[in-house]
Picture 1 (tube, one colour):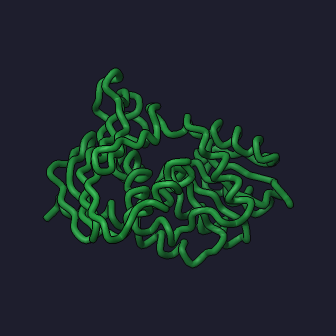
Picture 2 (cartoon, helix red, strand yellow):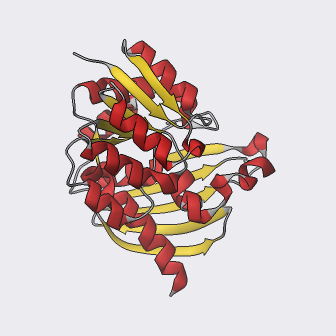
Length: 266
C-alpha cells in the first residue's frame, strides 16, 4: 500500500501530523506553506507523487484546497473544521475521498460510551471547554472570525461533534451569551440536554476540558490542546483503510455551530 503524503501548511499542528505519519510508516514527499500562494499549492497538487494530501492551513482555505485535491484524485485529510460553512461541507460530501480530523472519535472513552448510551434513557450533559489563549493567538488568523469561523469552530468543533456522535441530532439550541472569547448555552436533543461553555479567556491555572454525563466526568483531555493527546495516529490508521470521518459525517456539527451563531442574531 502506498503511503506517500504531501502537506499544505506548517503551523502549530504540523509536527503532530509529521509524527503520526512516521508512526504509520508513511513518507512525506512534499511540504508547502499556504502563504506561498494559490498558484504554488495548485501546482504542487497537480505534480506531486503523493497519494494523500494533508491540509493544515487556516480554516477559510480548507474548502478550496480540499475540493481541488479531491478533484485531482487525491485522498484528502483536512484538519478541523473541515469547513466553516455547511454549504461547502455539502459540496465536499459528494467526494468519497475527503476526510477530516475530529480525533475525539478515536479516544478510548468514545466507543465505550457509544456502546453504553441508550436511546430510551434521558441524559444530562455538562460541557465546559475553557482554556487560556494569549494575545498572540488573537492577533493571528485564529483571532479573525472571517478566517477561523470564530470561537465555536476553532475550539468547540471537537466537542460539539463528539456530542452529536454520541447522542444524536439536535432539536433545540439556546445561546445565553456569545463573544469572541466566550460562549454559553444549551443544546437539547431527543434524549439529552447539554449545558455548554466554550472559552479562550481562562487563567492558565484554571484551564479545564470537562465533559460530564449525568455528573460523571469523562476526561478526554487534561491538556490545553488536543494535539498533545497523540490521537492523530489513530486518524491516520483509519485513513489508510479509507474509513476516516467523512464530510457527510461531520456536516451535522458544522450545521449546529451555524445554528448557535444564528440564534444570537435573532
